[in-house]
Length: 465
Image (cartoon, rainbow, N blue to C red; front, side):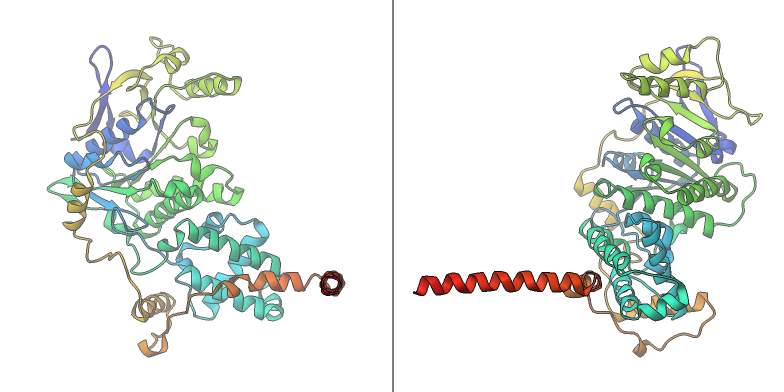
């Protein structure tokens, strides 16, 4: 197989994507309910049949039916509907952590100092509780920290602590732990078919910044861990990023620059990235320019802004005299799409209007029983257990970090679990901040309390008399 079939035109001409251009990235767009998920499933099945592994986030829970047509491995950050994916705070890094925690530049700087200080102390941060203790220690030794690393404030530490608590309430703490996820486990074949890796993501949608940061971290891991591949007959992996706008929305400039760089460079690792979202306008221009293969479902244009999006979508295609693209974008039915892929000379073909071919697998989710059976029979069941606790895992993490930096290993007896922080510990930086606002405010507060107490005492005496 040298190409994957996407669908056919009204004249029954098959439109396909050449596999050797599949790592030139792509874009699948369209309004809600126009058929993006079916297109994603069709393409994932075709890639799998060609021996190309696939990753996709199942944001609505309805992609799991693909397991009836392709080998599937289920993943779930929360460990409920798939194998857990875990990382460490240290390895996640300050940029993505700051994004997860909704920090401003000053607070992100304080977070970066926390991770750098932990590395300098060879006391690496595994969990969110580890990060909490590091922040508390920085607060207690703030004068020295400011001298060595730069200024930090009690207000920044207090904000980070509060936002860690918010992230935990969204389930984010489950992302951090042992054993670590290995990105190479995405790249597998079974009986000549590429394995489709589905991340159960409907729960993650309640924490959109966590979702976007996690998916980008996975993409970054592919770039870090995979060797240069050069030009291949087919990709090593195709990576579908559904609800891609969640990565770009309100992202700071330095993160957008990192995304652009990773998307540009990961192609050389043999990875094709396909962004799935409602409108091309959801993707920054510098990233959009790198997406050579495009599938455009219908858009709705009820406002002047939406009409501009339609015009922008039309301009993105190489013209075809037989097709009025602007008119087609507004009039296409469910399952219809405008398609342009890179062809043999490496340039986009003229746009074609097609009916996307129906997937071979089940449309809609598997039953819970079928999913549970697939998870139970997975080769990763023992490698990624749902629950891991104890000093042994912390010892393994610390020594892995030390080995990566050329440090000697620690004896197992020297590693202890950090106790979970109490609420008093979490609120300590805020208390310190309040105390630091000045004795004048404190005197004012104490005077007010004294007057209230005196008034209460007089009322009580009056009642007795």
